[in-house]
Image 1 (cartoon, one colour):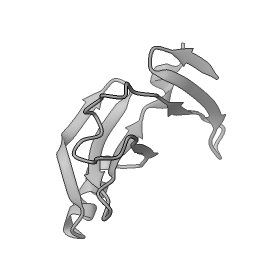
Image 2 (image 1 turned 90 degrees about the vertical axis):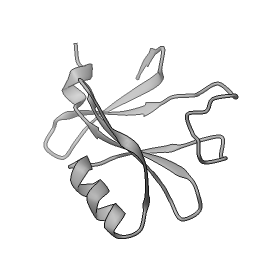
Image 3 (image 1 turned 180 degrees about the vertical axis):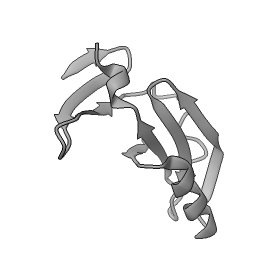
Length: 99
């Protein structure tokens, strides 16, 4: 486990032995990052092929929030589930965190 300005990173291996991570990040109580959801939290799910998944979810009537954002450590997209919870979808590049 590593601690940094974003919270805690938990390292684990996938079925092929590759290094992978799970992040736990607390936010300030007054954050707007979870909007339009009114919940004080947001789930972040690891996905493969984010753009393809978002296309499929859109055809199934799921609300897509904003545009895909790409960084050196992965791609992010957001949806609202049927109960109005914001969910962050992350296509990670885990080796970007290894030093």
